[in-house]
Image (cartoon, rainbow, N blue to C red; front, side, top):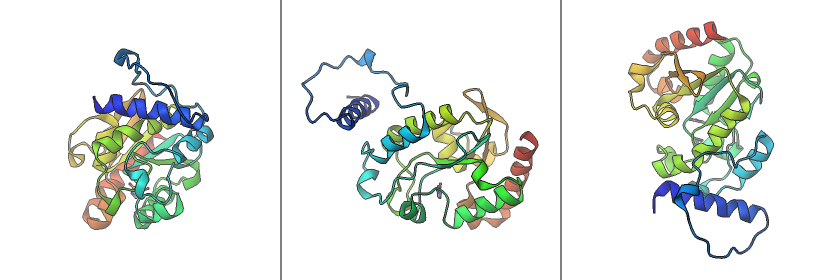
Amino acid sequence: MKRVKKLKILKNLYTLKLLGFDYVEDFNIDEKKISLSNNKLPDDLNSLNNIVQNCHLCQLSKTRKRVVFGEGNPNANLLFIGEGPGANEDATGRPFVGRAGELLTKVIENVLFIKREDIYIANIVKCRPPNNRVPNDEEVDACLPYLLKQIEIIKPKLIVTLGATAYKNLTGDITPISKIRGELLEFNGIKLIPTFHPSFLLRNPSAKKFAFLDMKKIKSLM
Ligand code: URA
């Protein structure tokens, strides 16, 4: 059975469980009827968050402490997307609160001159991959519909992907981040600019000048 199909079936079973079902009869699976869209998810962030908090669609749910749904202004014009929670985010349930988060917050407030609470911050996966490894395809496939729904609800004017994992998994484009960063692109009719991940900038301070140029471009678009 195809992975995506399995995940869709599992997701339907979890929805039924949330609705109070303990048992469902055997059912026929008509592949054509299994929609790949995320339109079964609720159209408001609070209800979506409730579902995500109870998600067990991938193995990351077994090792997470907290689900990190994302936070910020639900009507934000600007949406930042990272890779996935690290240890601090797993402990607090909030995105970008560790060292990388401190750098991101500084950039948002001191380069873009926007308050952190006025934008929205989310991740490709909502649960911490053990030892901060890159999330695998199965984990991303299971989690991406939540992010797509967040984008649909928030309707940002501009998306900024942070690092290769966020860019590649959102857009499907495998162009290296060093080549594509700072380009003004489009995702589902929304402007998108990929830039470096703040963790990369902490390890490679010489790349900060490029991230600064990207932020200036973002500022000019706001
Ligand atoms: N790195 C990420 O990609 N996301 C976080 O929330 C924290 C660190």
